Image (cartoon, rainbow over all chains, first blue to last red; front, side, top):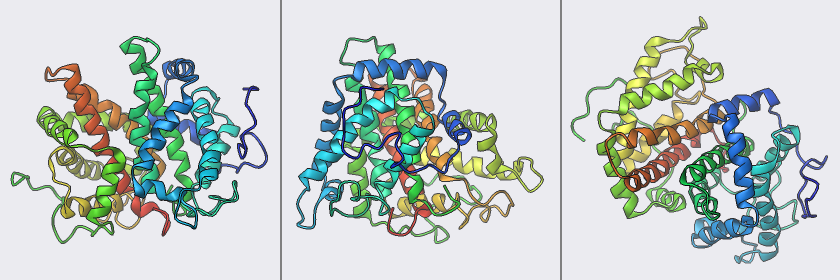
Amino acid sequence: MNDVPIISGYDYGTARAAHSPLSLAELRELERTIGWTDADGEAIAMAGEVLSGQEEAMVDSWRAIIGQQPHLAKWFFGPDGKPDEAYKAAVKKRFVRWVTDLCRRQRDQAWLDYQEEIGLRHTPAKKNKTDGVETPDVVPLRFLLAFGVPVIQGARQFLAKKGHSTDDVERMHSAWTKSFVLTLVLWSRPYVKDGLW
Amino acid sequence: MNDVPIISGYDYGTARAAHSPLSLAELRELERTIGWTDADGEAIAMAGEVLSGQEEAMVDSWRAIIGQQPHLAKWFFGPDGKPDEAYKAAVKKRFVRWVTDLCRRQRDQAWLDYQEEIGLRHTPAKKNKTDGVETPDVVPLRFLLAFGVPVIQGARQFLAKKGHSTDDVERMHSAWTKSFVLTLVLWSRPYVKDGLW
């Protein structure tokens, strides 16, 4: 993982990232809850290979969906009511990197902390601050969660693009779904009332 | 839908259910976000037929997973530190009914209101009150969301049990995933800080 290009605001593994209040033992509970297995570990590694080079196309496919729905697009708008293109471009680089990280990173303290950081960047605590912009100060949780469906279902076509068997695609897709939901769960934490998360 | 047996605490369509603060127009935004289409409407109706008679087996399969994980099982425990079997039995009847409703109900105001009610029953606002029990007063949101993976992935085997083509099973499973995530999103509302949902 030493091949990470410089991405503005990509504070993975740095002191600039938030610290997750969740322990690693509690993270393992969540892994059990989503049904994570050693076989998923192999399948997500295979997915990392298959998706290599396709990350930006995946993000473009999700951005196209967002762009078609005003209730999703508006969280990227500046005070002038138009898309903040510089913000969109900055977030996109990190979103592309997230695809790689989802498949390849060990789920250690640095990983856990960066999920907390991503969650915070969707809430008033940190949205806009990383990039110094003036878009709305939150992406409401209902849209973040609901958009999970296109992210889960849309991945399959990319997993199938390199000639793997249907079974392999299914195994990779299952591991993708589990990995993604795990991050989504962690992102939801800063939105939730004390004691209820 | 006039064939609903009497289920204790099943307050669907009654004045006892909560009122959702979401409008039907906002519900339609969420339907667009998850990618709901007319074809999904046909597929979920087919799923309702296929799952008919299998609802309890589905709930049993999820309950078995919960029972194996102390961090999931404990939310059903009474003050004596043991499972509250009467509570589990009461919730189970509604959970079984939820499978039917997920496939068959129109998403109107009564449906929306009952999703709010289900959400509240997982939080201190209403947990235990419907059944007059003394289990913990919340199911933490992270477990509710993470358990979505077994609910999504576990449905496929039941959708495949009546001899439908792989394509039909896939279509039904996609519609199941969308429908389920939509309810999960709505259940999350009472957990979230003001203005962030």
